Amino acid sequence: SGARVRRAQNRRLPQYLERGVDVKFTEVAGLGKIRLELEEIVKFFTHGEMYRRRGVKIPGGILLCGPPGVGKTLLAKAVAGEAGVNFFSISASQFVEIYVGVGASRVRSLYQEARENAPSVVFIDELDAVGRKRGLIKGSGGQERDATLNQLLVCLDGFEGRGEVITIASTNRPDILDPALVRPGRFDRKIFIPKPGFIGRIEILKVHARKKPIAEDVDYETVASMTDGMVGAELANIVEVAAINMMRESRTEITTDDLLQAAQMEERGMLDRKERSKEKWEQVAINESAMAVAAMNLPNFDDIEYITIAPRAGRELGYVRMMLDSIKFNDALLTRQSLIDHITVQLAPRAADEIWFGKDQLSTIWAETTDNARCAARMYLLGGLSDKYHGVSDFWVTDRINEIDLEAMKILNLCYERAKEILQQNKTLMDAMVNELVEKKSLTKEDIVHLVQLHGHTKPVPVSI
Ligand code: ADP
Image (cartoon, rainbow, N blue to C red; front, side, top):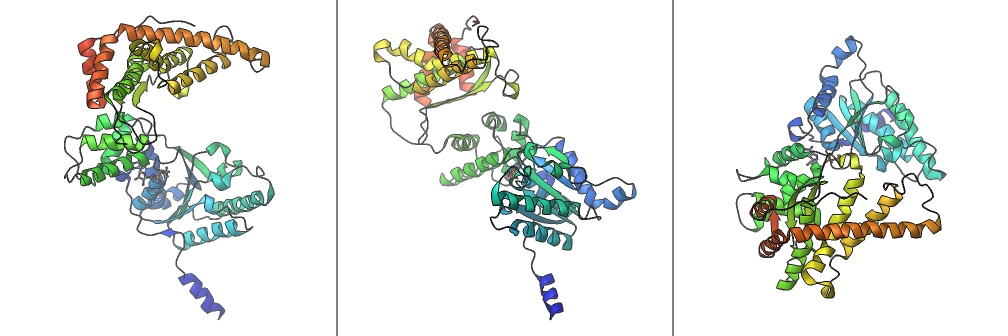
């Protein structure tokens, strides 16, 4: 009967196998040169013998590093799809069980199945869930994780027949992985998948639009510039939502506008069709236009991509999409001048309120942006960015906090005056923008460029603080 049991076990359906994975590289867009590295992994399968004969070591595991939604899972599937091998997957968070031994035994079965059905790709999602440096977590949960990790190391080391089973894992935190995992022969190849850039976003949108009825004249460039910072998963969703919008309105083609609306939705939630009085629309329009006009006159901001006063459920009143100068903001490093410009833009709504409605009729519409400015001013000082406080290390001493606050006030006042100056110098442009916003509710980059052509705009003199 022992034999019968064994045969039954052999016939057991693999638990971790994903059937029908048939993704091809053409479905993963915006990768540029990264694609070459992945094509090489496919070759480990298709030309494994050649590598072995020439003594080229095939990596034990490949680590795909990058933020969620950039396509790491999709890529792992594409490697399996292109090589025509089986795809086994598990999320490492599933390994982490409170019962000692469960995680480890899952790892063992996963690899056993993958070997029995080789050639195959083993994909481990969120490797950091189990692969964190050992000993960091105390208590039984920590022990369990360690046992699972040890088992994984054993499995990674386990085969001689490299090229038959290749492990691909994804993580957003390669820095916290246990050093044993990234030793030669284990996850010894790291591939970084960044968020897509402008061109990448166009390509990703196109890949997803391919499967949909899409208008021929769709302006992908505009959609791509409106989705700055978004990842593949979000872009795929935008195309889906745009298609639903098209269906709802009984049209037969997805238009640029469908995509733009879907992008707004992805970013800011559902459109809220609230009614507002004319005065209220105007007030919101002044608030948003002020930020836009201030930003377009400051050196650390690029173009204004979009302004809208269409309200979204539970969100802010309106919205201005500004492009920060990508070079100056490179690597999220805030320079002194860029912080000052940022504060100026955040104070512009408050300045506009004073200019357009007068001191007696100030509202609180600018409360949030003013708050942002206050925060930024403190950051400027506490970060030691000002000349006066450069290198001072005792900011946190209580009696200096007052001093910092006073200094922050000075910065805020200066930026406020600067915002006011910009708005006063560009009053005609502001008025025109407010009118058009109230009428149309949203302005695109072209609308804004057109307004500037008609009314011009003047740049203020730079200030130093
Ligand atoms: P990750 O594993 O990095 O979190 P996924 O691979 O799960 O991301 O991405 C989710 C979905 O988003 C994919 O199935 C695909 O539809 C879409 N997507 C993500 N990145 C891309 C890309 N580079 N090209 C095309 N589609 C993408």
